[in-house]
Image (cartoon, rainbow, N blue to C red):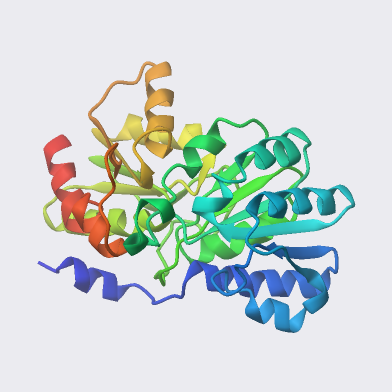
Length: 320
């Protein structure tokens, strides 16, 4: 049997989604001077140094002042600018939550909020720098979409789609290089899930950088004669309800996977949808439990909480 590592190596190597974000934003901004990047002392970590070098008149630096970042972004948007507000997700969605709620969402300005180094990407820095609350708090705010791209393709397409958005969008990016995932169709639309591979026994519904271990688990299960479907639910809000219901209808169990608290994120969104539609089947939310979060690298934290191909395979065997 192939190991998880061998499976990962069969995928085409990619780059960090943040690098794709920067490259795509430069391409868009070179053609449209109304596209601006606003940062809070994060052009380095946000991979925006090349953007600043090429388009110095289209980047605004506010310093370590996240509330100002969102307020300035909203003000620029009110004047017709297309603004990408870039800051570490842990600070952007905690320190600036009131500004996101009132200045952006309530005021209906199509600001693109880019949360970088999200989830447990800052793993070794501990809970102060973990962003495992962001999806939960933004799901509770009206008039904002929440997108968590899985790989370079979804990252590029998300930035392009966000440039055309007429309402606020929050995009969540991690730090590590991501391989190019297979998918049934090379199309992308905010609000429409992407099927990575089809199956009939168990469905993994994942988002962001957890789609990769879900895919690895599906490959291991295939060797065991178990058919696993993997869905990249890149848009957590609005949720692709039909994709969730269809997966629950065709499979014997559903497992959601996310780099986020088990409270308020993708898993609870799917659970609520299934329950309210009278769908009952074995179901498991895999994420960060309600406890003092383990500290270490992202890889170590994923291993600790069972967000690996091998661990997800074991979870599936217990349910399917």
